[in-house]
Image 1 (cartoon, one colour):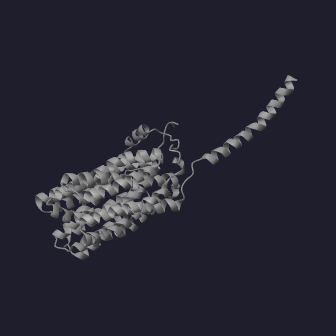
Image 2 (tube, helix red, strand yellow):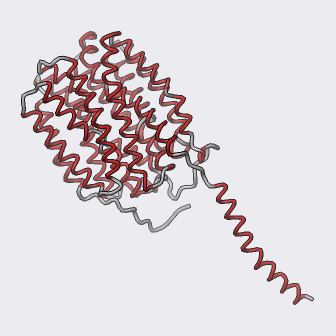
Image 3 (cartoon, helix red, strand yellow):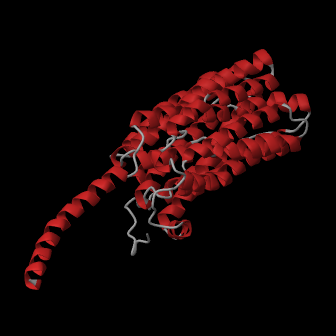
Length: 432
């Protein structure tokens, strides 16, 4: 009898194991994290980035009316915008950590409210110190949670790798469209309502895009718990900062920040110093935004087919060539518009490519955080570019020295991106 029972148990066990495997497989399939639709991520993410980046790109339009009315120096305004860029990068690290852990939705809502409050506070600034607190600290911190690093994390978690670089290019193009749309709109608001009321109107506009953030609530974070990750935060940081390609990407992004923020903030004043009408500056910034729509989309699309390090090298080489040609020719409306169109093709084209490299090397578990660290390097360059522009001008009455520095940095960035490797990193062990 005992022998017969044992034989039957073996048969039942052999039949039950495949059935149990099927049941477990079905349960795992049903409980695996769901992802957001591609169109929803792109539409909502692009609209939010359009507003956040569009407002940010127009701050240079406030330099002269604000400093002239308040009796401040250009260095005072430049310092506040420089601190804004530093805070954007610094808070981007922590915003990325929170988004990777709890989802991006909560981070974006708080950041949008802070953005609107910072714009209102900037409109009521009565001293350079108050300008630093509002335009610098508050707006800088809010940009960290409403722009690229956070949205790219959502893209990484919800869009397949074969479409990731392209999708990042689409969202980056939205930031450029925001520049094309909102820079001339901001110029119009300043002329029609004054610089203070223009900031209040933009604060209201920022609040109006908040409902779109509901479209970026990720199901995987619905219960407040993050998906299981292979690495802890410290392990991911130790791995990234010990990896040479990550270090080189940070250095290249530093140069990118220096160049674009110097040009974006000081271009209106530079052109006015050359005797050109204010409308030329507004049109120039709008052209940068318009052509960057095509440039960032093209860079993101090319990143699916070409080595991304070569794309980055080509971008920096072209920047250096265009800057050199611009400052060596007479400054006329025509030359300004040609330069703006050329720089527009290269303006944010580094963004989708750089972040796609990070995702490809390290995966998506800590993508928002690692993108935040690389972006911090970008913002350190931004601070130096905007502050040095104001400092050099106040002491020499010219921006020439900073233009020459931009050319030299283009050569440096082109060279250091050549050794970047985008192959996925090989990990010796996997930690649950």
